[in-house]
Image (cartoon, rainbow, N blue to C red; front, side):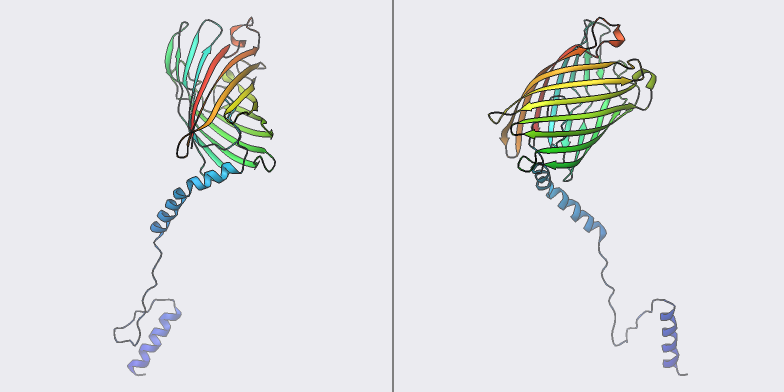
Length: 308
């Protein structure tokens, strides 16, 4: 076998074994490797496009649901995108008062067509008279919403949404529950013309201190009416029932009338909303022992929001 034949046989054997065969400079043709895609560049391009489409995506998400106002207390089942600040002035019924700055609100974003992420700040509290104290409360740092069903006012005017909230025991000694709290929630709403009802049912489940905190069943409902575009009077019922813990078997009910004004245009896509309400307990009786009295007796509430 001459040298050319031996070389051809060797190359054929290597090819059958799947071994790459190097080309020679004097071959009649040379092969150029196919370019490999740059995965980093592709990822960067996709990420850039995701943020470039942010407002088109969030506007489409809002357009496919009712356009009611977010209530004072009830966490709306609607997807919302805004910066929010709330303030509570609470009277405990025993002579003490607690001022709650921010009340665990913050930044709300719509990252997909059916989801919302709430990135909340911890509340700052000040208590006077009895056992004066001040400091941060436990941090409800994250709530995620998954919208399940929705139609805007022209196509049914309703919504159903599932939530999952997380609270960290990061508060000062005077204001912490010393336990993580996980809160699954189901929310729904239905509108009829300018009137709507929004409701949520939650279970606040602590991961520790169950014998003290107990599990709280929370049912909030808002009755809301809109007139003259910017006026949203509302009436809320805010009910909590405890299973286990120091309040086992007890039920607390607040009634909350309020008025929210908005959405006023500011600049570009920025809007402004402001509202206030008065919350008062109707159960249990204040003559009962301290552990059975409401968490607080009554409170003034204000809210300020910048939707975008």
